[in-house]
Image 1: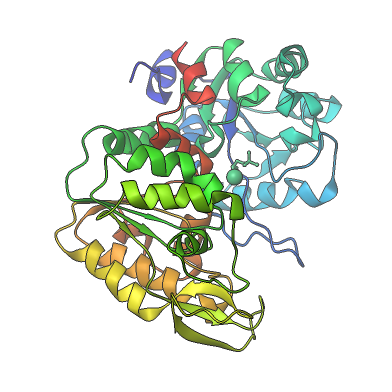
Image 2: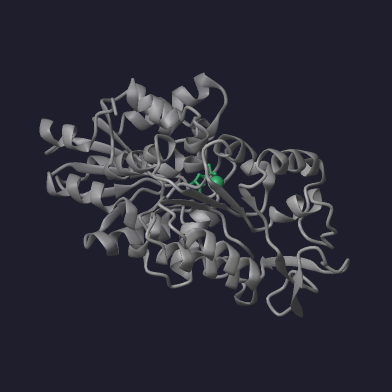
Length: 400
Ligand code: 3PG
Ligand code: MG
């Protein structure tokens, strides 16, 4: 990779320098309590932060959380993240209550060598996500003024053309952090020449989100297993009724076409868990994929499907990429599909890559051992766009 990385910056010496680190600390929060439900993304940037702290840098961390609308919104505050980051680092994190304003400037100015500050949510500022180059640039100027060098370790956000991802590196000496480097190394083996057989498992709710990656992967993969909410549009394309399950009507024709082109490669569910309602305590049964009752909603893949998918994942497979849950795994009654597939991937001898916020969170929430996977990506959209072969603004900015 023609990108400078953290070791290059460390070799120059960072002691006493302000290093602005773009992280993706966009962690899931409990809707009721606001508590962090999965801190994987915080732990993922510790190697970069730890190295900078040890080298005596003044570390200024910035991130987005959720999708606030360009103005402060307390439900998206990074306050809980600052607390958790401090616990994990074993040192207090100085929290700025704004992103580039008085609090940020004072907090950064007060940092001693080897100390860490976290700025408030980047997206509390309109300039961060603006489509207008000048508006983004003006915000990038303010952010860049808080650092002497820039490290991008926000892999989950490299597909966004946002000020902190795309415009700040044009203003400061810039390098890729440890996480971004590792993510790109791993994903590039999948787009290069993955060891075969190469099996991809896709789930999640929308076909429309996955269309481009399916198109890009079809010629490359040996098998493509499809579950999750998006499988119902494919089942419909096969001519089956899907009851009240998630259906993207305008994608049925596209799915039919993909099924034709992917004949012999694409595997769809043969049974599903169909429920009376989208609720954790809804009455539910396993039904054949071609026999979903008209009043019922499919919320998970069934046991026969899990067995079939597991067999496809185990037999001699050398490389696996998985993105997207197989069902509504947040509800115990509809978690078996995701668990079964995750276990099969964990047990397989293949080099496995788990892509995505949701699938990565599923691995941890279901209590699976992270070490039994080859790589758990912190990027959902980012890893998919990488596999699509798209130019990622955050990576392109580091190359310049
Ligand atoms: C994510 O969770 O997918 C990343 O943090 C990017 O967030 P975004 O989709 O809101 O840009
Ligand atoms: Mg996303």
